[in-house]
Length: 241
Ligand SMILES: [Zn+2]
Image 1: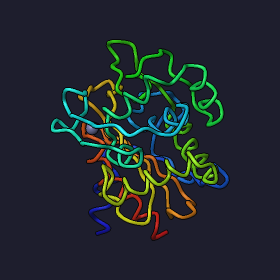
Image 2: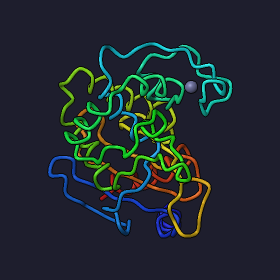
Image 3: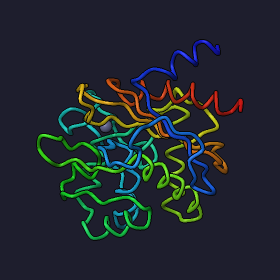
Image 4: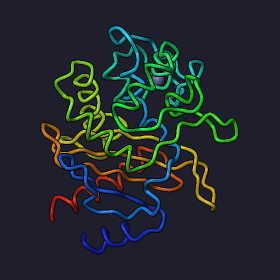
């Protein structure tokens, strides 16, 4: 097991940071330039959700025609399921009704930069570098923004987001993590010199009920759900320290 962990963790294609949820300090860092903004993919979805107004809607995802990554569609989605499964159709719909000002306010509250461009795609992490509509956030700021989410668990909409993150770890896109954690995956355009099609991201917070650590992981050249497997190994290592 130790050999396997070492093998995985020394891979140049993996970066991660571990942050103490209470102090927001970096506990461990294997991520050069963790304060440089990069595309964060679907990890931005909770913050766009907070900038929407009114109760979270229900929406039917028809898949590819609705521009969801799941070609056959997710079907009827409530907010929690949509977040757990990172349904692009649901969040595109939600993002269309978000005004730029509200998003700026939320971004400031959570210590992240707002998107430079106001497109629904950018707001849910679906933007493309060549179109100039990606939302860039530094990995460190992003990890701390998720810490802030857990600190605001008494707010009803945040509580709904945390429930979605719990479900993501249990049975959603981050199911490689498993029960007992909060998690979210994302896939974003690669910014490395040696270009990959996309990079997978996973944020994990644990324990789920009152998180103490946040781990943000990036794996070059894989989708987010695949990055969750590396995050699970790192999480296991952190538990044993
Ligand atoms: Zn969908």
